[in-house]
Length: 114
Image 1 (cartoon, one colour):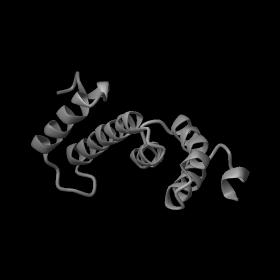
Image 2 (image 1 turned 30 degrees about the vertical axis):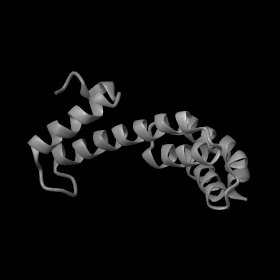
Image 3 (image 1 turned 135 degrees about the vertical axis):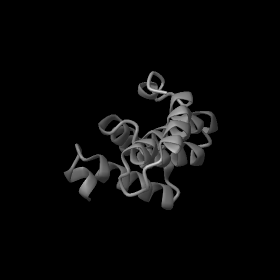
Image 4 (image 1 turned 90 degrees about the horizontal axis):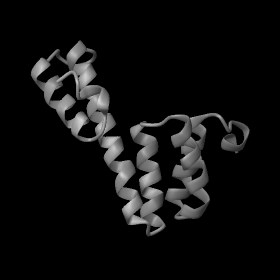
């Protein structure tokens, strides 16, 4: 199992955790998901996996926080793409709107640059 061989790999930990989501064994997936979050905080995919495990464990209140953080981080990342024109047409208005959403969601680095 690659997660056991690569304990410092957020991707390997997240893959193991997501497998546990798919086979509906959330208790086995929580440890690798939490390890992945510690290794790569703010990664939307990893936060999504953690939220899915919380939902499957009927820990719905806890599930809301990672989803919210993941969406906010996603807004941050998309704002940078629009601001710099990387892979999308440069659009400062869209970048500002996404920065505002990221700030409202807790990505503090965007609060000062609005």
